[in-house]
Structure formats: structure tokens, C-alpha cells
Image (cartoon, rainbow, N blue to C red):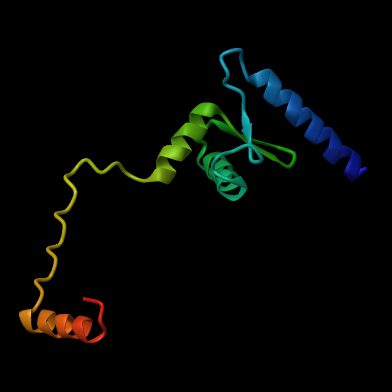
Length: 113
């Protein structure tokens, strides 16, 4: 009986996703198709459901996000936007003339210069 109910839930989840997705392309995204990857996608659905944030549903074994919720999760995943100037590049160390002379000497001795 459990196997039947699992299969029924899976079929219903697919139909529900098609029904809720409108002609404007706002279909629900399951963990298998998510750019977040299945683990982060499922975690996002669980978090949204626990916080009553909306945009998420769990139907059987499928974890679903709306396109809007998925985009919000992707923005959160990428981290904050850095609007500040990048840090200045570190200055390269100045070579020591004595080290340069030793290097030049080694190159001459090995015949590479």
C-alpha cells in the first residue's frame, strides 16, 4: 500500500507542478532540475516551509520551489554584491641586487645565458 501511495504522490506532484505553472513559464522547479543542486534545493524548501516564507512546497518526495523563490535562493547563494572598490593589489617585493647577481652567475655557469 505504501508503494502505491508513493507512486500516486509522485504522479500528483508532476500534475500539480504542471497545473500551477502558468503560461508565463512560472512552473515549479523540482530538486532534480534545480541549479542549486538537490541538497541545497531541498534545504531551501524545508527552510521556507518552516519559516512560512511561501514559494515552496513538498509533495511526496518532491521538493518544489516557484521560479521567484528559486531566483531569491540563487541570489542568497551567491552572497552579497560587493559595491566597494576592489582592494589595491599588493606591491611586488623589490628584488635584492645581491640575489640578482647570484642568479645571473648561476645562469652563466650553466650556460643558459
